[in-house]
Each structure stands twice: as C-alpha cells, then as structure tokens.
Length: 140
Image 1 (cartoon, one colour):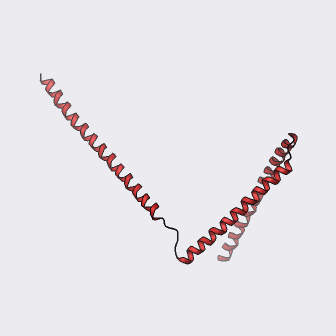
Image 2 (tube, helix red, strand yellow):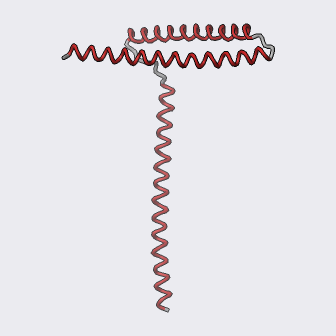
C-alpha cells in the first residue's frame, strides 16, 4: 500500500504543477496582449518603444542582480551564524526600550482600571445620597 500512496502523491503533485504551468501560460498571454496594446498606442503617439523597453529591461536586470547578491549575503550570514552557534544579533538597547514600553502600557492600563473603579464607587455613593434626600422629602 505504501508504494501506491507514493505513486498517488507524485501523480497528484505532477497534475497540480501542470495545471499551475498552464495557468501561468494563460497569464503570460494576457500580459503579452496588454503589452502589445500599450506599445501600439505609444507608437501611435510617436514614442520610441524599443529604447523604452531596453531601459526597462536593463533596470529589471539590475534589480534582479541586486536581489541575487542580497540573497547570497543573507545566505552567508545565516551560515556564519549557524556555525558560530548564535541565532540572531541581539540589540540590548532595543530590548531595553521594548521592556520600558511594555511597563508603561501596564501602568497606563492599571491607572485606567483604577480610575474606572473609582468613578463607579463615586457613582454608588452619589446614588445612596440621592436615596436619603428622596426619603427625607417624602417624610415632609
């Protein structure tokens, strides 16, 4: 049974990936048709699209190279940390500020609860005073 499960798993994965590839192909067709429409409109306006497309392609290539380099640096940094046994850089100042902020929030919540409780107590005291006044008024 285990062999059949493996085969079913791989068949399902293959089917999903093929469907994804087909969907990606449809998406590319839509994007290409939109590019053609906009390029045609720009040509009609007298703009040199080849030059513009080259500029955009060059920018995209530069961005991709930067991302690749950044990914390489991150990978090296992770490897270095793993080898040194240290998981991440620690910033004691940042941690101190975070703790201080939490303390301030707790103090603020306590103060709000205290004020709320005190205002309820005052309200109860005022109600009892009102009852006495009403009773005294009725006796007259």
